[in-house]
Every structure is written in C-alpha cells, then in structure tokens.
Image (cartoon, rainbow, N blue to C red):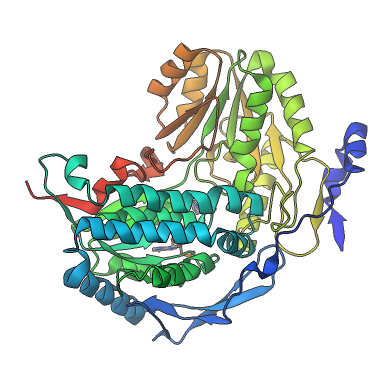
Length: 498
Ligand code: NDP
C-alpha cells in the first residue's frame, strides 16, 4: 500500500504531474546478500560474548519497521571487561608489534571490506535506511579507502612527525553516530590501529549491524584478540565508556549536546578528546556560477543520505540576482528525486533513520511554517510503513528562524539571499557551528577570498560533500575540535616523547 503526501500533492504543477506518469521499473538489490544472526553478543577479546547486563534490544529497518536482529546492551561491567581486553591487547603485543606488521592487518581489513562490499552495503541500507547506491558507492568504498590510507602511515609515523618520537596512547574509546555507521567506524578505528592503539567502539543504538559484521572482518583478517572490541548499547553505554578511568582517549562523533556533556565529564581528567559535532553549513551560490552544476551540488549537499549529514549544505545562500531562476530550477530538480525503498538502485532519498529523528524533523519543519517561511515539497509517493520525509525546500527564510539556526539533520533546505560577498560571508558565519561550507562561482580569486574568511573546517568550491581519506575533516566553534582524516588524523592518537 502506498499513499501520497497530502499537502505535497496539492503543490504539484501540471508539468510535474506529467513527470510522475513516467515510472522507473524497480531495480532492487538482493536482500539475501546478507544474513544476520538472530542475536549478537558483545565483541570482546576477539569473541562474541553474552552481555553481563543480560539486556538486549532490537535493531529494526527504518524502511519497513521489521526487526533485523537482537543486539546486546552493554552495561558498566561489560564496558569494564571490554576496556580490560583492549588494555591487555595493547600491553601484550599490539603496541610493540613492528609497525610494518600492523600495516599488514590494516591492508587485510581494507581488502576484506572490498571483497565483502556488496554484503556490507545491503546491511548498511537495511539497518540505516540509506539508498543502496550511496552505501554501495560512498560508504563502503570510503571505509575501505580509510583502512588502505592509514595502513600506509603505520610504518611511516617518524616521517609524519619528524624528530618528535610518536608513541601510541593506549586504549581509545570511540563513540559513533547512525548516519554513516561503517564509515565512521573506519574513520575512528583505522588511525587508532595504525598508530598502535587498541579500541573499544560503541556504535549507535539504531545502526549496530555493520559494526557487528565488521567483527567478522577482524576475525578473517586474524587481527589479534582484544585489538578491536565492539560494545553495542544505548547512550548509557557511551557514557560508561566516557567515564572509564582505563580509557586514554575518547573520540566522539554525534550531537553538540552530547559532545558538550562529554567535554564537561572529561575536563581535568587528562583523557584526550576529539569531538566531531553538528553543523549548519552555508552553501553559497554567486551569480556567475554554472547554474545547473550548482543545482546538482545543492541537491547533493542537502538530500544526500536524507540530509543526515553533519556537513550537509542545509542553508542555501543565493545571490539575489539569480534567486528566481535558481529556485525554479531547484524545485524542478526536486520533482525528479525518487524517494523510497533503500534497496532499490534507483532510489535517491531513502528512509529517515528512526522514528525519533522523523519527529525531530517534523517539529522543526512545523516551526519553519509557523515562523513564516514558505514550504515546497515535490509531489511524491511515500511508502505506508517506515519513516519517511519528502525532500523539502523553505524559501522566505529569515536568519533568526529556527530552520536557519538549528541542525535539522533531515532532507530540509532553507534558502536565504545576499547581495555582496561580504554579506554572504557575514550570513554564512552567523551560526554557532563551523563544520563546512560550499562556494559556487567561476571566479577563482573569490573562492580564495571566501575560503580564507569562512569559519568552517572544510570549504568545498564548485562541488559539495566530497570526502577523501587524505583530507582532514573537523570543525570550529560548536562543531567540535580535532581533525579526522589525513596526516592530521594521526595526531590525536599519539603522544610525543621529545
Ligand atoms: P547523539 O549525540 O545522542 O548520538 C551519537 C552517539 O553518542 C551514539 O552512539 C549515542 O548512543 C551516543 N551517546 C548518546 N548519549 C551519550 C552520552 N551521554 N555519553 C556518551 N555517548 C552518548 O545523537 P542522536 O543520535 O541522539 O541524534 C540527535 C541529533 O544529533 C541529530 O538530530 C543531529 O542533529 C545530531 N547528530 C549529529 C551527528 C553528526 O555527525 N554531527 C550524528 C548524529 C546526530 P545511542 O545511539 O545509543 O543513543
């Protein structure tokens, strides 16, 4: 059974209706490429173990609400055991292993991720709701690329930091979110292992399955027991890990609110910390840009992964002189986005990750309408079951509106205008966040002028949402601190004995 989005349909034009008559044939990826176990214990010391907490929770598909597996919920004692296993592995082998030997394990993991990429892509789309073409073409290849990249650094740390005697820290506690589950795991685990640390990683509650499949990758790679430990659970599991005195470093990606709580918790403890938090990026379009290319970049910037992206281009700043043609083109492009089954290879926008996230998006969208912004959603058919939200554009947005200030983390774009580069800059920087930005112009000098003044960790020029393991990523202000990726990504996992 399928239904149309009520008020969305009313806003359709005749041209759009004719577009809708044309349908793609379904092109589903094979569901049976992955087989989940009924129940997953914790992965500690190289084995799956029953949780001492004796607690379990279900992980479901956000597209169908079907239960995929039951997963252990790690309590305090479970975190203790995992940290002890990581400490043991650190002290009795891993940290003193020849760096070139460590590199071999990382290369092996990278290759196994490539070999198992179809299975992992299906698992990621089932558990998280993202379109298969994204998990297949972005998440899994990039996860493998991170392991390849950091494998290369493992035996070259002395060259990365000349005359500084780099040494591993010990046990890293790593907490990751639900928007790029396996990719965030790779961002965290690859540099930690390359630098000789061991890890205890907590995946997000709604997307634990690829991390659990990764434990089998570790087994295949014959990674020594205890080097990687996975403790599934909820926020309380993450909090135990943060508080644990046996952890030398916490690496966290998630909301600014939880990031601040972690920073407060660790203040004065000496535990090293990196935080990769939220964002409210400006995607800035000048009137001399290649317009069609910019429209594609805007769409990719906000509707990629349903907008569940910390660096999403969620604020579109358009130079006033091209506002009308750009918005017209954008709306037209939105009518061609296909929303639906994440496993269908034609799908552009998949399911919202959880009911809670859907409610958050709805609440913020309602606030946008109440505050006076004008909403546009293309005619689109949403499945009956699961969690869905139509791609949305708000025009007539004032800077003070919540939809221009707060991270929505959904497929919702707020459009604002500017007249001069100075005004664009002022508006772009007028946010508590500072993770990323985009600049669209044919003028190279303007790109450089803007990039030097934008308070954002990453600035893309005439492109958006491009990731590469060699390129450092991280924020300013409430988007956190520390960098992941590139040579910079090694440093948070090292101490230097001068
Ligand atoms: P959280 O910050 O709550 O979750 C991120 C990770 O931290 C998850 O593994 C979570 O576990 C864990 N966690 C939760 N509470 C604690 C705690 N007190 N101590 C340690 N770890 C904890 O994000 P949400 O999933 O709740 O999403 C809320 C909002 O955060 C989103 O709407 C979005 O705006 C933003 N967000 C930003 C992300 C980014 O990449 N910058 C990523 C995800 C969300 P569990 O999942 O089990 O609760």
